[in-house]
Image 1 (spheres, rainbow, N blue to C red):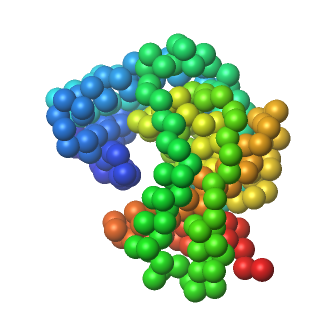
Image 2: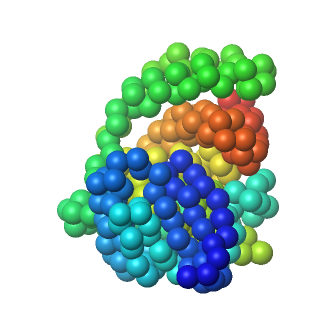
Length: 268
């Protein structure tokens, strides 16, 4: 194979482009057995996801489990993260709402054979957010300290919805779009799980704002009390993304996280 061109990296993987046609994604998992198992599991998952997703998803070409490598056909478009702030956020959000509706309608019994259950108590989400906030607070503008700390000192919302199959990491770094901001694909299914249906709506709210959340929920259909938990997950998750940006020097994550403070922790 010819030269590889770095495409970027996230919390779980690094990605390279080969010959302009393939993406070679390498897992950061340090345990060799877990790394190999994860690659094979995701390849099997992607074969199933392509049948239920209304949006393009990676088509596996080959795996190299010992190297933690999954190779798939490159999808068109660029990461929505690279276009932040997003011009057509409402249009993107509507597409993502329909996408999540399709995923969440999948049989959890069938999908549980391919993915794990991620049902972390909301109290743990809040506790982790409190810890991370302590590490990043110096970077948060002081005007947001009071509302952020009031949230962190509060109680998480209740949850009654059944768990569903979801992407479980639907940040804008995993959404591909074309020049007109039309969604062309959803990538990186490493964290896909049987989970709370509100988690990915939280990422939409975190990255695209309150109006986008409204549109996504409307496109989704009957959503019960997903909004309250989506807002909770967004507020917890923004500190993790800010910490990642600070640790890696990736200003895209730092910039979007600081911008989101305006709607996540509005100053009254």
